[in-house]
Amino acid sequence: MKTKAVRIYGKKDLRLEEFDLPTMKDDEILAQVISDSICMSSHKAALQGADHKRVPDDIAVNPTMIGHEFSGVILEVGKKWQSQFRPGQKFSIQPAMAHMGTLDAPGYSYRYIGGDATHIIIPGIVMEADCLLPYNGEAFYPASLSEPMSCIVGAFNASYHVPPGTYNHTMGIKEGGNMAILAGVGPMGLGAIDYAIHQDRKPGLLVVTDIDDSRLARAACLFSPELALEEGVKLVYVNTGQTADPVKQLRSLTGDNGFDDVFVFAPVKQVVEQGDTILGTDGCLNFFAGPTNPEFKAELNFYNVHYAFTHLVGTSGGNTDDMRESLRMMAAGKINPAVMITHVGGLDAVPETTLNLPLIPGGKKLIYTNISMPLVSLYKLAEPGKTDPFYAGLHEIVAANDYIWNAAAERYILENGKPI
Image (cartoon, rainbow, N blue to C red; front, side, top):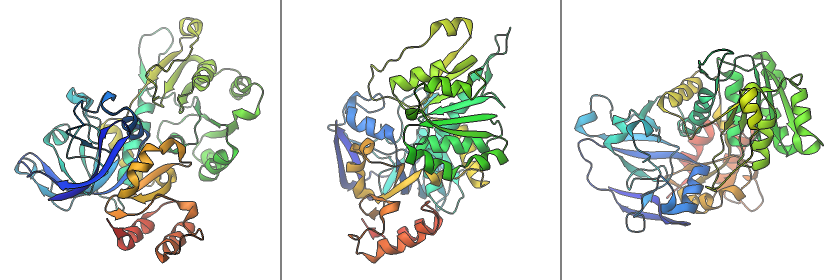
């Protein structure tokens, strides 16, 4: 079977190509990808090429498919897995298979599986790792976004606290405690706000910061303080760029007790150090945002490490249980990851979008891999230059839903978009 896929050949060398997939083996599964959301991690891999820890050294001659936040439909199942999977099933994939003793992951390391493709072959290791997850939702995009949501769930689970006088690490954020999400109104920050408000273990106070009023305003529209209060959470948005002493202002919101849990959503030295400074006793600093610079450093207060028992954790992705939790909460209508999406496009938009991702404003870029379409902001579907009636129809659906992506918009794009 032929596939079209975006493959990486080296640093900043992404190519959309058509080629033949090999014959499927008995321990493999043939599938069609429908949607993929582009992750900053893919941008980092595109910049680093073979220097990236998950990307093989020989990509110049054996290129790998990129994209790891994807969903699709199973087409054919090898004999080994026919008792567990069937043709026609929708699926999502957890790319992090670290518990198998490998850093290899779909979307980085394999020649025939990645999210930015029309068709893929899922290797046996994915099923052996229990990382192929059946999905029963109507639309595909939530399953694509279950991977980034699982990163958020995993980060919340990785935070920990130690009751005084013990050596017991109590995993998870402090229930009813003070939480701060710094640089927290980007796409992943929005997902974290959603999860913090609607999960079972909630903070009592949630402070979200940024230095952009328009981004903060959008976050406040999506997740208002009134909505959070209904869930038992006091939610406060703060523009730290408009105060002479942001640390003093943030600590004052806690009665100067400091924060129990601080999540840093931007790899910026000043933000990391600000997060360290606002920690309270036994406070946990979670460095969520992965830097592109392997020499990235920031200062921490080791006096507080010793006397106030502050501590640092970091996570890179979630695990399969975290993804299942994401899917469960989506199915229950508790979280809506569509608020992350600000752009849509087709497979041919992937190379340029991936390479320039930090320069493109907004949130998540959602790709429909069997469609040919430039990347378009949901807010610009009705621009005068877009004379194709296709965009007018899509604009009507999205605008009617407050410019939030939805199942009707997905059906429209799949039924009316230009096949690639």
